[in-house]
Structures are given as C-alpha cells and as structure tokens.
Amino acid sequence: MPATRPQSSSTPPRPRDGAAPWTFLTNHAHVLLCLASDPELRLRDVAARVGITERAVQHIVADLEAAGMLTRTREGRRNRYALHAERPLRHPVEAHRTVADLVNLVLPLPAPPFVPGGATPATRAAVAPPPLAGVQRRLASTLPV
Image: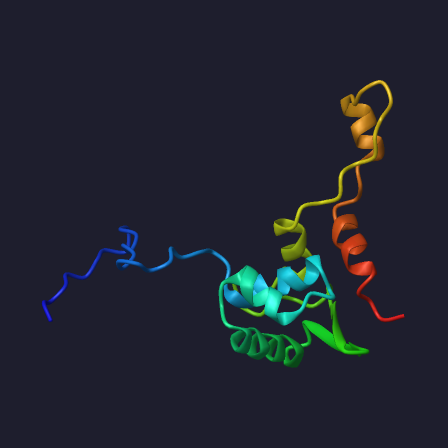
C-alpha cells in the first residue's frame, strides 16, 4: 500500500472513492431529528431516511433512551417516542444547548399565521411565535399526559 501524505489541518479531507460525504450532524442527531418530526415513525423508516441499517437505529435509540434524551412508549403494535426537549446536549462544546435548540435549528417551523393585507415588520412581530414555540408545538404531542 503506498504511503499517503498527511494533510494539514486547514485542508479538508478528500472523500474516498464511493464514500458518502461527511455531514455536521451525527447519526444520533439524525435519528433524534427524525423522531422529533414524527414520533410514531417506524425504525425501519428512520433507517431509510438516515441511510443506516435498522439495527444501527435500534442501537442509537437505546443510546438516546439511556442518556435521557427520549422515552419509548408501546402503543399496541407500534412505538411512540417522546423527546425530552429540556435535556442538554452531551458534548462539552454544545452542553450549553438543549435538545429543543437542536430541533429548532434544524427542523422547519410551522408557517406563521396569515396576516390580512400583507405583512409589515410590525405585523410580523405581532404574530411571530416565540423562539421555542416551534419545538414546543412539535413536541407537545410527544409529551406524556
């Protein structure tokens, strides 16, 4: 095998032939975001969206449960996943942020209400949801009653 030159830290790594490009978020984050967007999603469907095996998704969900990031509830033959939006992220670099911050950053917010006569900066501000409103609405249906 030929020796390869080490790349400097300022040079981005080149992907290997046929390798998927890297992303900023881990598979754990991708699985968490999928379940935040649809708490009743089957793990088979999560695996297809993330691009990993169903077995890998099962391990990730077990990791997320063990870390207190989500709870799995059995409903008939299906599972429902409730995210714990108040939990801090795990790495020291992002520990000042919560699961809600991640979800709000990545998932689209619901459309703001229609303002008759067009939106002006003042009317936009009057109907704009508070910063966490999106994740609270998204996660409201996943919280235990």
